[in-house]
Length: 545
Image: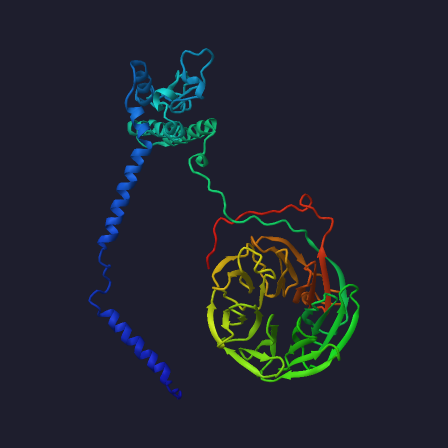
């Protein structure tokens, strides 16, 4: 005997609502009835049709009047020879413009075309044939001298051809040879249109694209590979003096490297998990680090030791940023909170809560909005640092926003804007209101873990599949798509880029990768616009979402 399972109260409630809705739909008095017609929409449709007919009459009235009113007896005879297919079944086609004058000497190139010749042994009873004869200026007699009529000449000829075919169809009935006549009429009209050198592009005014053209940038190349870490390299930061840079790794160490030579200068230990975020202060001799061990540390670079720790995160810390003008540190992590710390007092000033998932990217700016965070919940939030509240939420992305980048010269460019990257697209937003500008013109089709932009407007994005793409900041054009190469002994699946950053000058790019190496990139000095031209096609439509 089967034991009956208890019915959950929630499912019973859903069933009750579903049953009630079904009953209301079934016994509704307007069930299966069409909605009543809208008088306003009908008025709009009627007025639109009236305006369209009026416009057609104004635009193409010259053709109708010129064809309906022959000027003399000779022109009337030529016109009748064209239209009366029952007697001759020949259709006269105009030739080039210089054949419009019958007084000029020289052969005429006008064609008089009728239905095709039937095969031998089949008697159609009509005696139709294709004939070539001079028409002596039918282009002027039939179409007149109106420039609009000249533009519409191929269409008018096609109409005459189809009229001849229709007369044959009415006189002989549907048979196999009418299909041949239709094909012949269409072919002749196409030949005449090409002889006139006219196409639909001559009728439509071409509007130039308003999309900005990309600035030419030299391609980037890898010139140095640094090995030294024993785990994935997850974070990077540069010294304001541009003499060294530091990297944090899954081997729980922070290593400081000489930027010019690439040699190791110092190794710092203190974290017990991988280091996800690094930042070097340009106001003090401090370096800040954050990791999966929930710890945020302040290092004194004069003593090379930890002098402060900031406690408060409930899980791993994924991102870290320093405010450019005040002594404030911002960290975001898996507890879905971006925390604001006072550097000197180690006190938590704010806990910016509002995200539903991990806060994985953050950056700051001197003016409102001073704090911008991106999360795995696909949203970007602007924060008011005075009150610790949300100013705006952007919901344009469909995947996790793992990386964001602010233009270093945001007040020099035409528009204050920043870029955000996720697996679906790279988008640009306006500041300070957060208006969506446009998507980048290609899709990297990877999980983008890091992005950076330099003063020249070169945006670099690194994916988890080892793809490193370079973009023009203003136009969104991808001018280079490169793939990182793993060091010997590594798996192909370890070709992933976790962090990247430009140096202070913006002339060198450093990437931190999953094959435990650090790669340095620079522009190719031998490249020119002739050797590497810009292959740019402006988009036909601008996606506004």
